[in-house]
Length: 85
Image 1 (cartoon, rainbow, N blue to C red):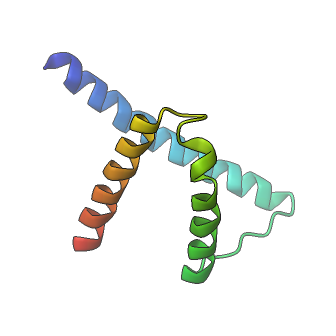
Image 2 (tube, helix red, strand yellow):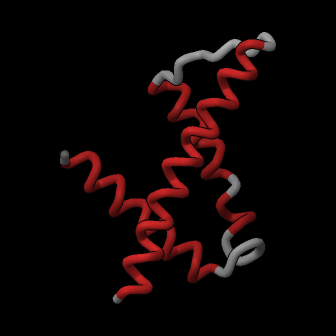
Image 3 (cartoon, helix red, strand yellow):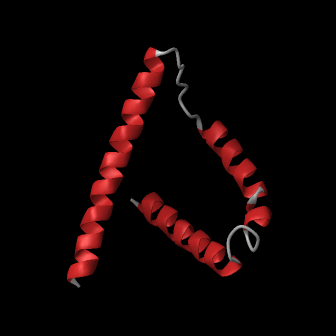
């Protein structure tokens, strides 16, 4: 139980640090000319559709099918919980 709690805390800290580092990187790139465009729902859907076309190349080839399927189930559950809020 203590190990799981420590791992959970460390994971949360890494997530916060990682997001902060990503935000800092974008700011640094913007100072060098990067133009950031807001992601529209249409663009998000297009990216998602493109990613899903690669799933058959990933599942069972780059990642075991069982693991891929489990991740997809977890992701669907997570998204459903988020949508319910």
